[in-house]
Length: 171
Figure (cartoon, rainbow, N blue to C red):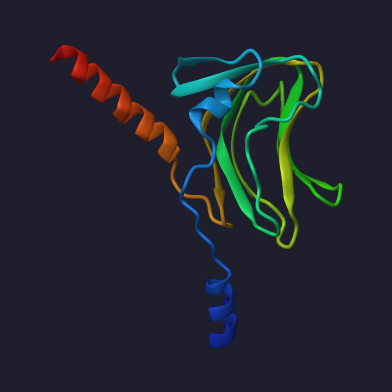
């Protein structure tokens, strides 16, 4: 079955696409979680969170703009515990699930866009019993389309400065 769209309908769909591209989650934001360790496994580089409280704010340093859509994407692997997830918290008190991972699933890729016309106030984590979870290629960007993972610009600048310092000490 094929569908036919008018030019106006097509233009409206195209005009509604917003692509951010810039990763708003800096490396330090991940390291600021309680009990985070980093490493590499068969999936790639990860940040492993050890969470014991049920509803911690995942990224307390993030600031969100009013009535702006955000898209969060990444991969997640449950290491221990029986269920966890992330969700958007909105200024009107409602929430939107980003992902929910149960011990029977083990691994999940996700990409979720916040609701149009709502204001995100924070991203919260949910753990049913506490536990350990690995996050890979986590990216939060403005807009309603996910793009490939890239580091936050601040992280790239920090790496450049580290190399500059290393080179300066060698000369």
